[in-house]
Every structure is written in structure tokens, then in C-alpha cells.
Amino acid sequence: MVKLAARFLAALWFWRGSRFRQIRRLQIESWLYGRKIRRTARHVGWFLVVRAPSTVTKTTSLGDGCVLNGVHVYGGGDVTIGSHVLIGNETVIYSENHDYDTGDAIPYGTGWTPKPVRIDDCVWIASRVTILPGTHIGEGAIIQAGSVVHGEIPPMAIAGGNPAKVFASRDRAHYEKLKAEKRFTLC
Image (cartoon, rainbow, N blue to C red; front, side):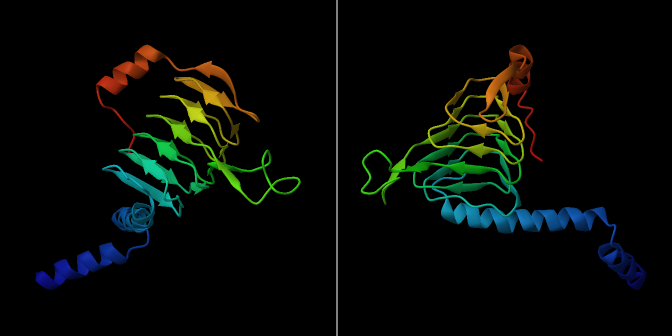
């Protein structure tokens, strides 16, 4: 009987279409990618899911329940990412500019000018978004895929384009109801 159970479990484990095996592989990948993020970032919240190789700087702070799908953070400025933020694949966040005003050469000098980037809670950033230095994205905002974001995006806004412009907004009552019930996406 034990041999039969062992054969069954072995067949289940090595079966290519096994959902358990796929889930376990994703958990291990997330743990490995997340380990690198935790070693590098200034602060990481209690629950972090990293679906694809991502990089952050030493000045990056991540809130609770963040999901990263291949985000890359560059620069020496502060990057603050709030709680329950989902960031799509191939998203790039820059936190400093070349020093072109007081630089020692033309078109820009050898120095850098850091500018903080802040992303508030419950923001959804789609794939291939570029976030430039000095950007603030308000709570509950949604950024459309392929956008270039600079400046201020207000809370509950839906923005997109190059440069990103607000073209709609979310239903605040529904958002507040879901937030009060603590119904956050953790996938």
C-alpha cells in the first residue's frame, strides 16, 4: 500500500501539467527574486510578490503587499512605493536627472540631480510604463500600459499616454467600500 501511494505521489509530482508543481515553482521563483529585493531595498513590507527579475536601489522603500513583475528602479533619489501596489512587467522608474543647469560640460555635466518618486497606496501600474524623476502618483490611481509619467497624477485618476494625462477617474465610493473591507489583490 505504501509503494502504491509513493508511486502516485511521484507521478503527481513529475506530471508536466501538475497545477501543484506550477504553483510551487512560482513560489520558489518569487522567494528567490524577493530575496534580492529584500537585501537591496531600504525597507520592504510584510508581503512581497516578485514574479519576474526586478531591481531596486538602496533608496527604495516598498510597502505591504506589493506585487512586482519585472520593475527596474534606477538612480540615487528616494523611491517610495506604498502598500498594495501592482507594477507590470518592463516598468522603469528613474529617480535622478543629469545635472544640466550647473554642470561642468555641455550638454550636461558629470553630476546628477536626485528627485524623489512617490507612489501612494493601491496604485496599479500596467506594463512598460516609464516613471520619470519627481513624479507623485496619488492613491488608487491607474496608469495605462506604455505611458510616460511625469509630475503629479491625482488620487483615483486613470491616466495614460506620452506624456501621461488623466482621461477618467475611479468611483470613489466603490473604492472606499473595497478598501474598508480590506479586499486587496495579492496575485
